[in-house]
Image (cartoon, rainbow, N blue to C red; front, side):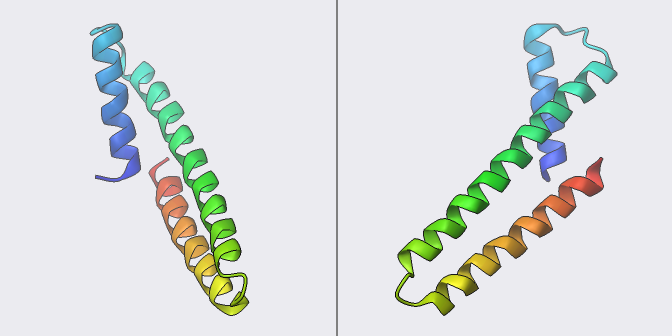
Length: 86
């Protein structure tokens, strides 16, 4: 299940708790908010992970750079996937 599907499922579950009669447009808006929050979290986590790689591998800058580059590639792939869902 991708993030868009997870956001949609979470929005539907929230809608069932708040009001079983939420319209599809309202569920979509809620899903968008959830997806945006996930995207922000992914970006922040990626930044923290890259900084941790540089801190932990300060003696071996080449290794730190390789780890940070891999983290960045994974983040870009995930964000591209999210953007294609919109």
